[in-house]
Amino acid sequence: AVILALLVGLKFLPTARAAWAKSKTKREFIFDRGQRYKKEGE
Image 1: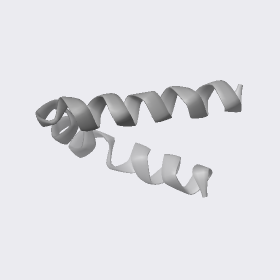
Image 2: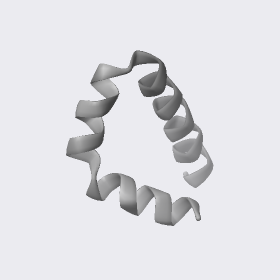
Image 3: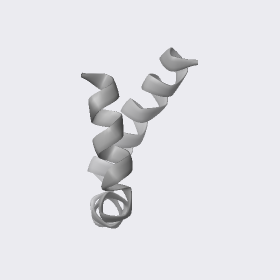
Image 4: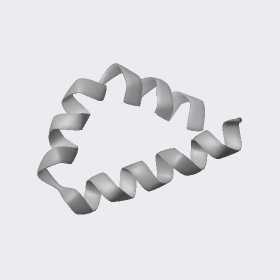
């Protein structure tokens, strides 16, 4: 499930970044989760 989410996230990254820029709270939430997944994946 995590891998699928990352693949979808990469596919829509340009659009997602624009959306995150509009919402600091959501942006921080997503980046926090992303950092946790990166640490677990290393």
